[in-house]
Amino acid sequence: MSFDSASLKPWALVGLHAAVRFTVTGDASPGLLPRLLMAFAKRDLVPDTLEFRRTDGAARIEIHMAAMPAEMVHLVEGNLRQVVGVAQVARTQEITGCVRRAA
Image (cartoon, rainbow, N blue to C red; front, side, top):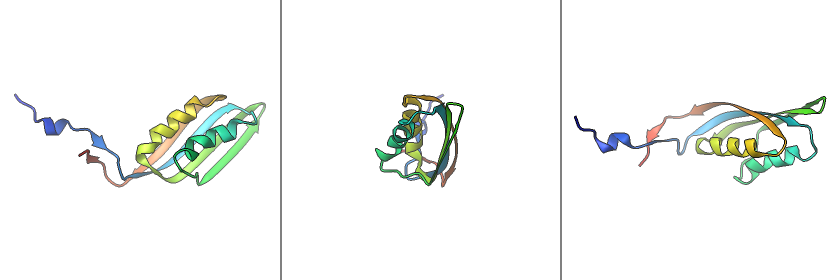
């Protein structure tokens, strides 16, 4: 039995967009918000909504983008996880368009 090497090419999300909501929990420190937003700013992205809630020294931040380039979602999520003071990052997303084989 032989396999066609063309069938093993990776799938790509290039050109697709995702509606993404990141929910971040961590320390309620003064520098947390700017550090979180840097993950978006260095990729020239501007979140559509940002909601911050503080309770008993802890912070819960929701950052939403209606149309983020799909190939950047995992990069931004990785940067958010590396921010000092972040305890947890959760992500929900819906990819729009279709997935195609990479060239």
